[in-house]
Length: 267
Image: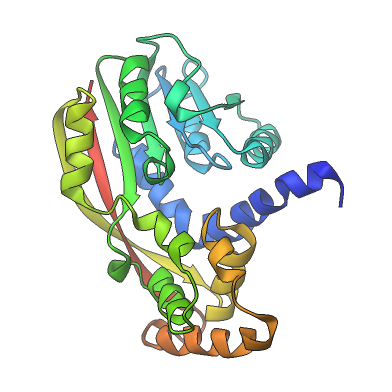
């Protein structure tokens, strides 16, 4: 495998497996609910492979602009390649949410889908998003709710911890699950008219094994926890996850709930 293939392999798996299985409905929600209209300029912070950025670009039209930024080089490369294939004019850039490389008052809207919980300095990142927004414009951000309300991850963590394995990396996506903490973060960054609501969508995979494989190949943090399972114990681990997710098994697929906190705040 070449260096470039190594850089993009996890991002390819994320786009192929996790975007359709989990992320896509949340990307539609974050764009449709934030008044993205033709002619405006939108920033997608922690854009990943760009699914939400692409939705935003289609709504902005030829007279608007969608911009995406992410700190993961592989994610940015895949985002660029997909947007080119789909004929979308999107500026994707490698960079940190804590030091956004944009002028103040530049964007009409900003979105951040499942990124806030990973930033090393959340307040700095929120303040940066506010800085680059024009007055009266909107930030919409989504983080996961508690892990008990996101059953696939719950099953993974339970099976890991039943083996006395460190599941911290699998719990990390839920480290900003409190609606109160999310609201206070926006307030401290200077946003106003802040609302936080709960939303739920279904995650859909062919099977529990397919879900675990998607996490192992494409999840930015969870895969590090899964790699702690020994090869000798892997099949037993899969069987336990399958059993834990049995209430959400359907005839043709696995379909389990994922709950998120939706933050809407004004500059």
